[in-house]
Length: 329
Ligand SMILES: *[C@@H]1O[C@H](CO)[C@@H](O)[C@H](O)[C@H]1NC(C)=O
Ligand SMILES: *[C@@H]1O[C@H](CO)[C@@H](O)[C@H](O)[C@H]1NC(C)=O
Ligand SMILES: *[C@@H]1O[C@H](CO)[C@@H](O)[C@H](O)[C@H]1NC(C)=O
Ligand SMILES: *[C@@H]1O[C@H](CO)[C@@H](O)[C@H](O)[C@H]1NC(C)=O
Ligand SMILES: *[C@@H]1O[C@H](CO)[C@@H](O)[C@H](O)[C@H]1NC(C)=O
Ligand SMILES: *[C@@H]1O[C@H](CO)[C@@H](O)[C@H](O)[C@H]1NC(C)=O
Image (tube, rainbow, N blue to C red):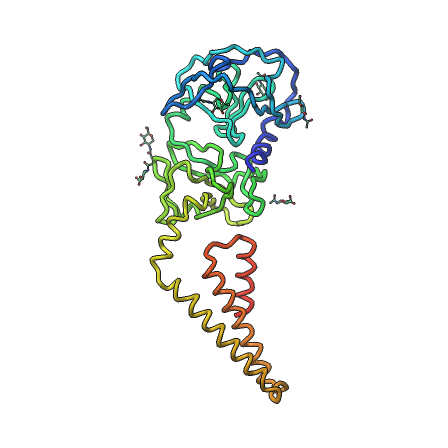
């Protein structure tokens, strides 16, 4: 999904690019036999003779990502050379939100910025960039699909959608960056409406008055399937589950409901069985009405019971079950 997202965003950046293969000087942050690794809040070079290039570069010529095991021939590599600036920030290549472009620039979809060859250095798994001061000092809030796109829940991907009414207001002293929270199963779901949540000055968000999500664990986005113009808070089940199961286990009604519904279903079934044993009454209008009524109640009860017992249900089945319950009652 991340790749699809990035391609959607790139269409906007590179759609009018003309190019020529020109020799360009690229810095590698550490020596060839060293690797750039995170070190607490900073970074350092460590010896690692087994490290090798496995770099995904956006190739302007055919507009796709290609994996390079040796760097492009027109790149002249200068080893152990970091850009000379304050505010050097390490960006990981993970999920393709930050990557080099074949003409020698480095694109961060995450920060919506293009870095020129003298503003960054590459390494095997991450790059160092001269970050704009605004991005360092200000609190960042993630807009899942970046500028010019919104989220499609059924497709689990971003779709291009450029409209002024789909802007998101996060208040003063905060900057919007692109990206999703990292989910274990790579499945993202809306967990609350933004206008019903509170965004703190430190970038944390209190969703629905009970779920406190730290800055990295959510992103804001409009949902293609929701016609309302209010953005949603998108997160992963592992970050919101603690809050959901907590409130459910504290309420004993959720244990009583399925039991009652199951009992009710058993006796409705018994009623049907008893009715079918009296063939003499089968042609009576009253009997037919009663049978239809009981069948509807039975199906409705069984479906309600299923929703109570299964806890979390996927979007598709959930919609089908909800619609059937409505039809049956
Ligand atoms: C690479 O292409 C991008 C998009 O056209 C452009 O903004 C950037 O300046 C180019 N980089 C170089 C080093 O020419
Ligand atoms: C050295 O690099 C290899 C390949 O990139 C990696 O699997 C390994 O963990 C690295 N070792 C150290 C000590 O960082
Ligand atoms: C794009 O170009 C690169 C080299 O320039 C090549 O290795 C790759 O196969 C090409 N990809 C496609 C889809 O044509
Ligand atoms: C979802 O994917 C299907 C099939 O790829 C496509 O036809 C449809 O237009 C997509 N929906 C959205 C909202 O992008
Ligand atoms: C934003 O930052 C400015 C300068 O640091 C400060 O004066 C102002 O109170 C801040 N606004 C909010 C809403 O925090
Ligand atoms: C952010 O601020 C809120 C409200 O002031 C607080 O509850 C929360 O612990 C803070 N989060 C972090 C990560 O500092």
